[in-house]
Every structure is written in C-alpha cells, then in structure tokens.
Image 1 (spheres, helix red, strand yellow):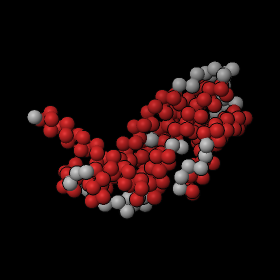
Image 2 (cartoon, one colour; image 1 turned 30 degrees about the vertical axis):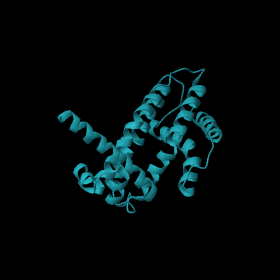
Image 3 (cartoon, rainbow, N blue to C red; image 1 turned 135 degrees about the horizontal axis):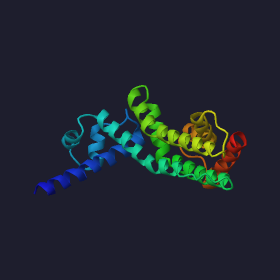
Image 4 (spheres, rainbow, N blue to C red; image 1 turned 90 degrees about the horizontal axis):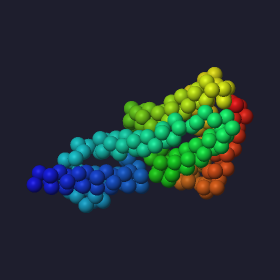
Length: 206
C-alpha cells in the first residue's frame, strides 16, 4: 500500500512539474497561477500546494532541474582529443552539437523566461547560470588549456577563449530568437554558423 501511495505521489509530482513548465513557458511567471497549474495537471489546488508550498518554489525546481541536461554537453566538451591533424574537424563536430543543443526551442524559451524574471529572482538566475552554462564554459576552458599544453592552440586566458568560442557560435541565432520570440534558423544555417565560428576561432587561437 505504501509503495502504491508513493508511486501515485510521484506521478502527481511529475504531472504538476510538466503542467507548470508548459504554463510558465506559455504565460510567463506572473501570468501563471497555481489554479492554472492544478487544472492543467488534472489535480486539485490543494494537491499542488501539498507538493510545492508556493509558486516561487515550483518555478525554482523547474528551472534548476534543467541544469542536469548539461551533463551530456560537459562530457562532449571534455572529450576533444589532442589530435593536431583533426583539430578543426573535432572542434567543428563539437560546435555543431553545441549549437544544436543550445538552440532547441524549449531551451530558448527557458532562457527567455529566466531573463524575464532575473530582477525578481536574481539568485535563481545566477544559480542556473553557474550550474548550467558556466559548468560548460569551465570544462571548455580546461579542454582548451589541455590542447594548448599539447601545442595545438595558443591560449593565454583559457576562460576567455571559451567565451570567444561560444560567442562566435551563439551570437546570431540566440539573439535572433530572443528578439523574435522563437527560433529563426534552420539546421543548415546552424551548421554554417558552427563551421564559420570554428574557422574564426582557429584563425585567432591556432
């Protein structure tokens, strides 16, 4: 009986998270009520409050849960071999995966949602950045330093080099999406941005 109750509770918890994510993405934080979330999750408002004491805590759990998705990206970034002949090819493969992952519609929606509420929840935004994107940057910096130690790159500030690399990739598609409200690119355009970004990066750092 207890295991059955725990299973039902876990399913309701997930239903609430899924409903809240959809509602926040569609209506924003201020435009979403706990009534909206309860209705969309097909549970009572009392059940929502049983799992989450207030809307802020529910919002925080949704935002911070997404940082777990960064793990695969961190592994990918750390896995670049120190191969001089295939350096540009390996960086291009990384750039294409990186750009595709970070320009998914839901990722861009979440980014917009966090930025829109940064004044209200500055600590939440800072935590999301630190546990998410900053982890990738730190791993990328360590990778660039390792490649520099093998004589493949010329790096004096590995962290700045990581910022340059990601900036070259993300500037165009992310800014377009932020101002238009939705992705404005095709996959072939993303590949072109990735290829051009790697060429510019290696011209400066190789």
